[in-house]
Length: 137
Image (cartoon, rainbow, N blue to C red; front, side, top):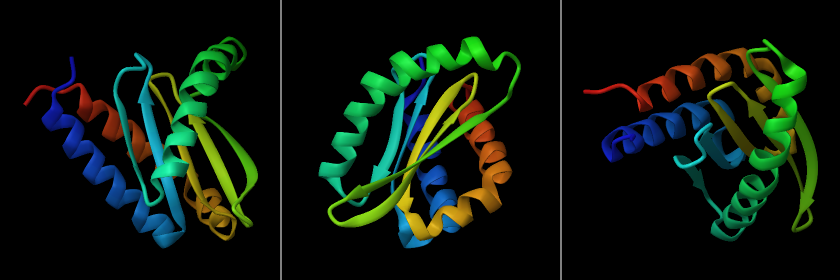
């Protein structure tokens, strides 16, 4: 079981890391470990966060993650980008699949270049953050 202290520490450091890349363009992020029970996240829009969480848990984890694992083999991280429109604004939603977790981020579409420029950096930081979840203090 993951300690609440580790979860809070990882949430805070992940949040500041992602905000350092995306700034105010970051609408929300959700991280779910492969066990599916530890969910970290942050959002500046609670209604949107709940909608994305619901879609994430019911579709992405149950369907896409299990299907992609079959096709990806030894690929370390696989990212999917979807452009969406919500409340008359354009956003990009990114799902990063990893053997231990998946991450969903949603940000204003203009910030998509920040994701592509920093994808490997985000991947390394996420692996590090997730491993901290399971370390004993």
